[in-house]
Image (cartoon, rainbow, N blue to C red; front, side, top):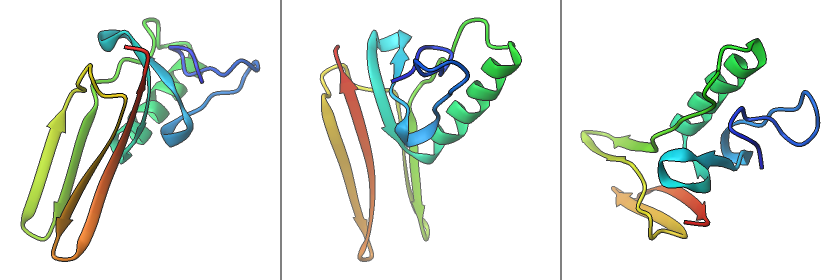
Length: 105
């Protein structure tokens, strides 16, 4: 678990991506998002935090997407009623999944 600056409880240690459970201000909860967009955005925020240029903390609107051949899906946001949700999408025998963990709504 990290704070809004993505800092762990140990000084000078930051967590990003799938391992980071971080506060979601807009949903008033803690969440851990296993998707490439979360990995990319938490990495950018952690670097900004280290450099001292992230005054308001990490703010993330969950955004998920997948593309398989000519088929695609997108999803923005998080439902307040989700506690643990797995989205499975089967296309041409390929399984794509996103795991959303939301604790404390």
